[in-house]
Length: 180
Length: 132
Image (cartoon, rainbow over all chains, first blue to last red):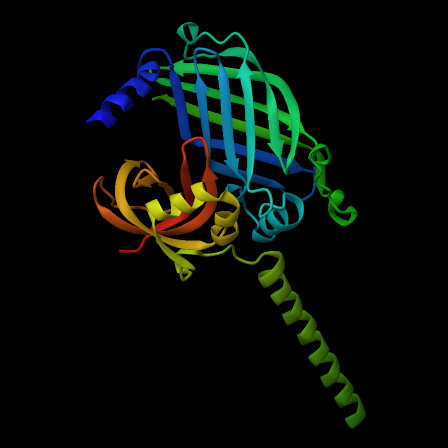
């Protein structure tokens, strides 16, 4: 009983102030296809994300093993040689959506600026890009895309295959966040 | 005449080698099938809460032990939503096919461990199937 009361007090700020939105099933896709070569793309459909609506803080976590490729060998190379996912099992983004006011959101969407730190392959890089935020009922959806260079994260692509993998990788995300 | 016959046989044999070799390379290496988690024997059988506890005690050790391995995880269903099932509020399972799972049911899920999710404090499995 005492434990329950303590728990209630701990949860109070969440109930009253913290408008938390989150998802376990966000999607992150990346594509590094070079025209006229085989598609180099992968998708992760179980990305976790949380948004603190009052401050616009966003946290995203993608488990690297969750990226699936169409070609099994490509997936193996990604895991073993490039992203080294045994050593670096996750990619995270911690940032902020500037000027987010959830009461003014609508279903058609508004464009905001998102800034934050992307950590991947053990390296962190600052990302600033545009983000589209829509709201319908208790779901806030954050979508957008940005470009990164594998080299910035210390991912080396051997010369033999470098002509088949784009120098800049496009990362697309879609995070439908539900009210907690 | 016999000499030419032999040469032809050798050429045919070499060609067959190249063709089958190429075929095997194409199928088993370049375009080999992805792992079939549903068909694999689980490397570990654990309770959902125990698996989570191991990750929370030492992520490094648990990662080395479980990451990318096929696990059989037991526990009580605490949440069901589309293709995902959460067991004991500890393990998140993303299913591949159809599943008949209900809240409060005790189940065993076979899936591939993809790591620990700090945002929700859960261990994630993908390519899950029901084993009982």
